[in-house]
Amino acid sequence: MSKKLQIDNMRIKKILKQGLKFIFGKRSIQLTAQITQLGPSELLKGRAALITGGTSGIGYAIADAMLRAGAAAVVITGRTEERCKKAVNQLLAVSADRQGRIFFQVLDNRRVDTFETSFLEIQNRLSVCGDKNLKISILCNNAGIQGSQFGFAKEEDYDNVMDTNLKGVFFFSQLVGRYMVDNNIEGNILNIASASSLRPAASVYTLSKVGIKEFTLGMAKSLIPHGVVVNGLAPGPTATPMLIKGEKPNLAIDHNPLGRFALPEEIANMAVILTSNMGRTIVGSIVYMTGGSGTITFEDVQYPF
Image (tube, rainbow, N blue to C red; front, side, top):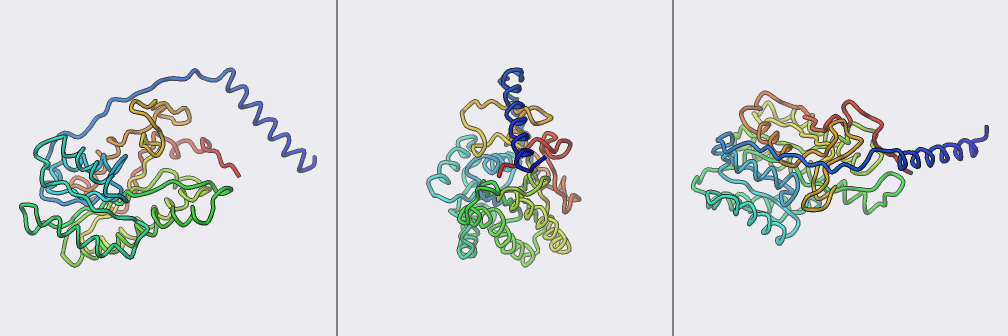
């Protein structure tokens, strides 16, 4: 059989499969999930946390969870002042006791040349807190953007994704890690990785997250002798603005063993545990929160070219 005929047969089978699925497939199911958050606690009492990409989605949920966990201060970063201010105002509206505990810094992960100045400004912002000796002891590298598949990516797209998701994380972690070591801070660095790193890297995004997974291990090895604990948290499909839209989105997802998207609040709960003393002995680990996608199922993702 010729190669062309084989390809044509494969295309016909794919079309038939899609048609049968349309005719006989499962009915659309509207699925929601109850949000379960960690209650108010002192897990992060006296700690100051810095969360990149904290204006929405997982980053915003982590900021909220860390405030609930008693963090003395939380600093979120975002690319624009408008988005940062909006997120801070929303976080402040939750509870009156958050006044003077939540701040923002405009930061673009692609602009490595601005990191030192921005981090100095962040430290200055902490000076308004009650504790003059308060220092950043938690870094959560959450900022990230999606990218195109292998067959469709352009160089500009590749650079934007890699600079944001990997290069920026590398150099910002280098800066904050050095700060923790120089100040004898027994801190935590948590990288928001992705379950996509369990799969063949057929997109710019996945390639960047494979890099984050490996960098997490190397950073953990480098910093644990200095008392800095590094881990990664790898969500699967999560109900963030990056993936789904709407105020009451349908959480159903048929190719996930759990049957639904994860919620940002669920990811945030684990982020608090991993950066608190409860997770102190977890070092160099990637915690997968995927609903089984990529851990017990592997052929549920398309690889177009």
